[in-house]
Image (cartoon, rainbow, N blue to C red; front, side):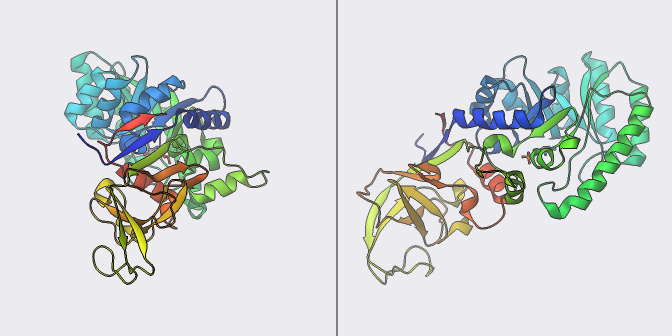
Length: 382
Ligand SMILES: *Cc1c(COP(=O)(O)O)cnc(C)c1O
């Protein structure tokens, strides 16, 4: 099938990022690499072997379908943890395949224990504690029932973890809320431990929390965005680089997203380009059409805003982003012609289009844009 764009993954960048992460988290602490959202758009099937080659042996996903994809390509010894959605069928598959699952309600706990009883394989579970995110997790009241259920069934499970998730550790404005979560977490953990249950690992930190609350890294950290070379927020980079000279970014982006000029033509001064009247040519302009649009994850908010690189020159999106294509102004590109490479994300020579520079909005856009990159476009390791 002909694809209109492709993605490149830079394995040296991953090496650098994992090096940075490992120094930060220190020896003897488990690293699980979060690969939900199709490995943040990088592509699970390409990404897992790449990360394994750099020594990663534990991956975390959101749902069963993602776990199945990791399972198909991983080494036999690599472990998987599902942090979110699993139906009963998925739970059975997970338990039989020794996949770790977060348990955050009694129903799922009972189901997991039932499956374990029938199948003879112990359920590998992480008990998620509700500490103030108010998404999933056992709250203080429900925890009593969970504890007694666990105590009565101790031959059917391995307690892999006691965990929680912070509600926005990447932003200083959430500082108070996260501090309260930390207190609640400690209180709930004490309650579980008092009952005699012992978890292999306590864990709470995503990338931002690992940077901002290193004392909470405990036995394992769950790193998503950092491994791909992005900071969880602008703030987190500023905080990290404070007082450091030079303020060099230790993280390297793995991903490049590229397409080609599909068509080149001239528009005259005074012509409107594309739908409506949002772009009026103010000079005689050489225009290139690129076959990537919002249907491919190139968000509509980049209409008249987006940037790209062609032959080492920065160019701008003209008019609205269409479903399947954009127009770019290539008047200043030397020798621009049909078939030339267009870099939508990544480097062309010394110039870069970063995901965040797609918009002045927060880095939250990094997460969103990356995960919207279509699953089916080809990915190559370089
Ligand atoms: C997504 C996620 C992470 C990783 O978050 P990053 O900010 O990308 O590091 C960790 N834990 C849970 C529960 C998550 O859902």
